[in-house]
Image (cartoon, rainbow, N blue to C red; front, side, top):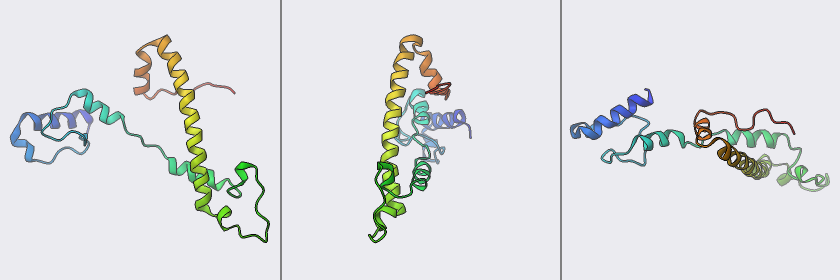
Length: 143
C-alpha cells in the first residue's frame, strides 16, 4: 500500500469517528494514537526516521577477518600452551568488531557533519532535500 494511500486512510479514520474502531493501516506512526491528529510533516518524518542498516552484517564480516581478538591491536596471539578460548572466541571477536565499528561510525558522522556544514553554508535548504532523496554523501572522494 502506498504511503499516500495509508495517509488518506489514516486521515479518514481521524475525520470519521465511526471508522476509529477499524484496524489502522500498517505503517501509521506508532507515536501518534488514532484519536490524535498529526500533521503531514509528522507522517513524513515517521517514514524518514528509520535507523536501519546492516550493522550485524558488518560486525560478523569484520570479526571473520580477525585471526584473533588481539590482532587488531597489534598484539601477538597468546602462546600455544596458553588457553586462547577468549581471544579466539567468535563472540569475543564480534565484541571487538562492534567497538571498532562504533568508533568508525563516530568518525564517519563527524566527517559527514563537517561536509554538511559546508554544504549548508553554500547551498542552503537544497542540501536538506538531497538528504531526503538519498543522494550520496561521500561521492568521488580520493584519499
